[in-house]
Length: 131
Image (cartoon, rainbow, N blue to C red; front, side, top):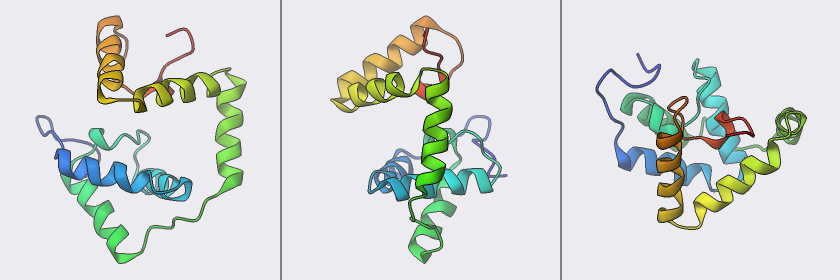
């Protein structure tokens, strides 16, 4: 329970938007979501891949103030070095910036991922640089 979506359950767009908006507040907020996912046994951090129950537990925890928003620069640097070692850090960031330009840009990326195939993840971090 809470380890991803149920078989046919789609997460509420409202809950997903609330989580994504919270992540965008700061780098520390984004890391807070990442930590919450990892601490609850989730390696994937995309809110769209979570159950409504999981998203609501996170939002309740943010309301209660139990999610740390302290930015851990050391952890961020380690993650960046890992991506850079694979030559993908800048490329991932460029794709994410492109997606943020408009809804149309994001939808183009989503369509490209579906057409090219591979895994179902839309997250650019889940793709190798050849993708």
